[in-house]
Length: 188
Image 1 (tube, one colour):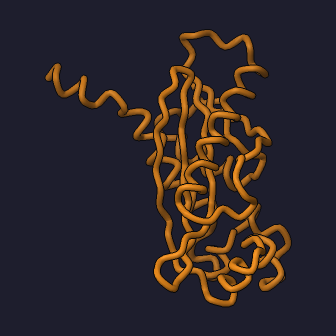
Image 2 (tube, rainbow, N blue to C red):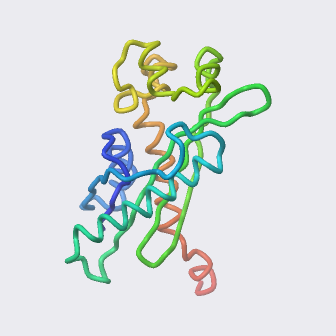
């Protein structure tokens, strides 16, 4: 199994590594710095979801170009993870999307890890700022996106960003893994 992750962010690479480790303990994982094709601060599920899909497709493409020795029988996946925010009534909520694409064109996704964004941060996002730099400034933790993330700051380390993302990544990988579930049911 070869998994290409659409980011150089160690949190995202580690989250996918954890998510894949049980099923594919010998998988090769490589991160690629690819564009999301959406705003730096995705707003809404549609934009965040599109960012994840774009990252997965770009990572798969870049990985296949860089590893042109991979045969058609090798299992090759691109994985994109995108964090964003969404408005829910008068509240802002964090949201995460993960997309998995393969070289046959299958796209499998999952979404989750929603939590309410405190108003002090939500106000700044609504004013056009990005969550990561806002939280870094408030918390004093530089480049918080590559460390514990906002969830780590918000929960005082009870949950960190790698943990937050790994469950969603495992779900998306699992949906891909079980993508032929109807065929299996018909043969039983």
